[in-house]
Amino acid sequence: MKAKTARLDKLLGSLGYGSRQEIARLARVGGVALDGVDVTDASTRIAVTPDLPRRMTVDGRPVDPPQGLMLILNKPLGMTCSHKEDGALVYDVLPDRWRRRDPAISTVGRLDKDTSGLLLLTDDGDLLHRIISPKRHVKKTYRATLARPLAGTETALFASGALMLEGEDKPLAPATLEIISPTEARLTVTEGRYHQVRRMFAAVGNHVEALHRESLGGLVLPPDLAPGQWRLATAEEIEAVFA
Ligand code: URA
Image (cartoon, rainbow, N blue to C red; front, side, top):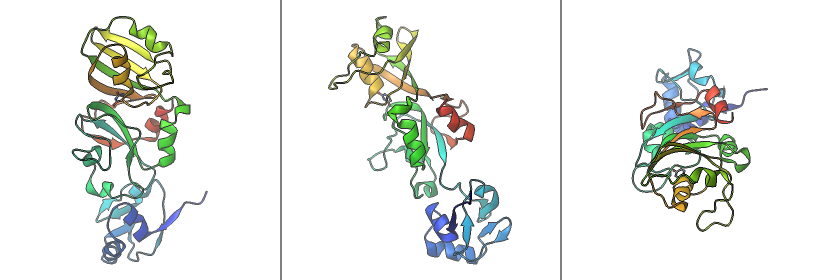
């Protein structure tokens, strides 16, 4: 298949490097190189391939990855998954340039402001929808710390496929509860309803005091990522989400 091509100024503009004029100026003075050769004309068409960061430099540094990226973030507490709300947003962890990209980088689903852990971000709309599509049943595993000891009946109720959340008219799909201690449990769900985990425990008279997402599909939060840290996902990690 022939690689998609784009004008240099349009490509770097979409990656947040500046306006077309700024990129044209940068290219003219030798700020952009492809395979070690300066690209001085901003109208030059460039093949947009995933290996571009290994071949192109901007101001001597590898260019950012082209569209089609996936990031893994260890979401810290206190950040909102939104582009436009007030207060600290998850996008604040990204460099300014990455926040100017078009298409924009968005979270794959949402975690509450008070939930920490594995959060994926992508600029690939198809990939995003494949992960959050209810038809795919991608498993989401959370570790919950509870205000009150578990009664012991929750595992069967959550697994029954009959639990109804307040204000809804369709029961939840079966979910798996693993009890870790009287006030700690690991819950795996396949849906993504609003505040689902907190509302499931509220439905059994309990209250979630802390919530942390450990995994999505077969992708476990990498232990090398401290809260607030992120990195590009590898192709194997993206595949693992669907495993
Ligand atoms: N369920 C919740 O209640 N909150 C989250 O952030 C994720 C799942």
